[in-house]
Image 1 (cartoon, rainbow, N blue to C red):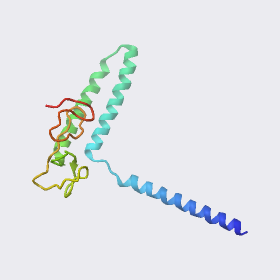
Image 2 (cartoon, rainbow, N blue to C red):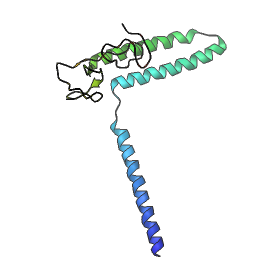
Image 3 (cartoon, rainbow, N blue to C red):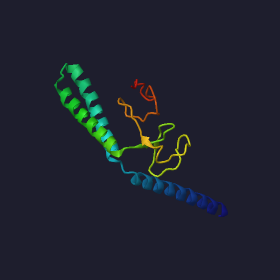
Image 4 (tube, helix red, strand yellow):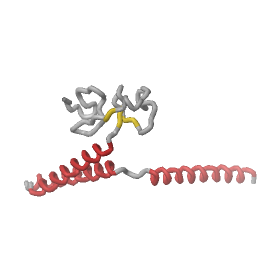
Length: 147
């Protein structure tokens, strides 16, 4: 009997641990609400997926009429993404160019002290949208040559 009680206690503790981790995952998933910018990027990626499928299907049939509609929608999403990005005016570290959250005292990436006079608007790659370091000549994510 003592062995069965031991097994029961172990099973109870494992079930409790699994239940707690499941609750944490549920709480974590509900806590993250996508921003307007994230939503626009998601919609744009869905359009890219649709474009890829359409290109594949039309390539087999040698049709190209559906492309124009999707290209127009993608361009519209890109304009909305740029407008939303400009609206948010992300601040960045003057030393490394990493985006700095509102009210931060130090940069999370390089540790440089950030003051109001040091903060600037983070530049983004015109091709992929990733944040650029100050005075960068190329994008580290996509390799785009910058001006």
